[in-house]
Image (tube, rainbow, N blue to C red; front, side):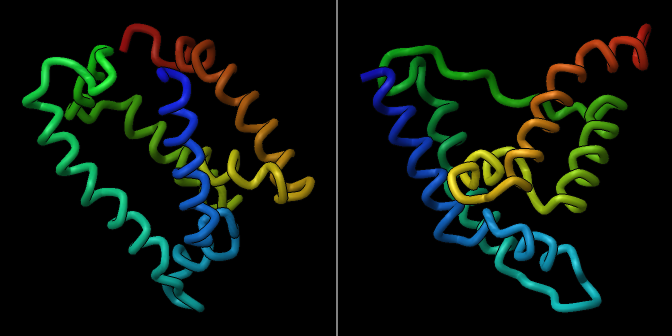
Length: 141
C-alpha cells in the first residue's frame, strides 16, 4: 500500500501535466512571452495546484502522522537566502530556455523525443553536480 499510493499520486500528477498541456514546451514558453503570443494556461494550472495545497498544509498542520501512518514532512523553510535566490534564478533560466521543469520533463519522456531525453540527461547531470559546485561557491556562507 505504501508503494501503491505514491505510484497513483505520481500517475495522477503526470496525467494532469499531460492533460493541461504543461508537457508542451511551447505552451510554457508562451506563458513567459508577455509581449508576444502570451498564453495564460500555466497561471491556471499553478492556481489549480496552489489552492488545494494551501488547504492540505492547513489540514496537515493539525495531524500527528500521515494518513498511511508515516511521518509528515516538515513544512518548507520561509527563509530567503543566497542559495535559494541563486537556485531560483538558475531554475527559472533553465525553465524559460527549455520550456521544461522536472515534473513535465519526466512526464514527457515517453513522447518528448530526443529533446526531452537530452533535457533529462542534462538535468540529472546538473543535480549530481549541484552539491559539489555549491559547496565550492558558498563555502563559509
